[in-house]
Amino acid sequence: MKIICIGRNYRDHIAELRSATPKAPLFFMKPETAIIRAGLPFFYPDFSKEIHYEIELVYRICKLGKHIQPRFAHTYYKEVGVGIDFTARDVQRECQQNGTPWEIAKAFDGSAAISDFVPMESLQNPNDIRFSLKKNGETVQDGRSGMMIHDVDSLITHVSKYVTIKMGDYLFTGTPAGVGPVVPGDTLELFLENTSMLRLLIK
Image (cartoon, rainbow, N blue to C red; front, side, top):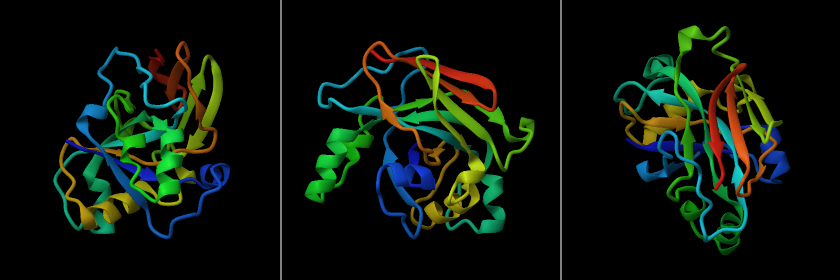
């Protein structure tokens, strides 16, 4: 099992970070050890002073595939959930300034919170799924899948050119605007449409 994460897939988030829009989907990986086990909090790591939350739609891959054609991409997932891509923003900035890879800012242990999943067929509009994040009871991120620069089928097609996707892999699809810092004592609550999917304490 692997975690495939897409960067810069929402224009409003690209603008808030003053980043360039990539010509093709940008992706990176997190290891299995990044997943926060059910019921556990996010433990603030000692190597960063600026951890940011990034809520994302997460699709669970349901079969093996390589060089997947666009017309078949929709058959590689049946469920969707929400997750947090935790980012050590200060570490990431330093890596970017030095021109070095920034996996240490994205792929550290506990950097991926993932909710339960719901069947795609249960959603009213699976092509424009709303998802949102509350921090300490206040909505800080609110997005829709229809706002993606590259939709999930396009992402699966692109990623599978380079990496074989397998049953049980997770695909994080990018975050909308509103990312920001967390501190110990904060509580994050993730929503899919109007349903609370995950509550997470920062310790």
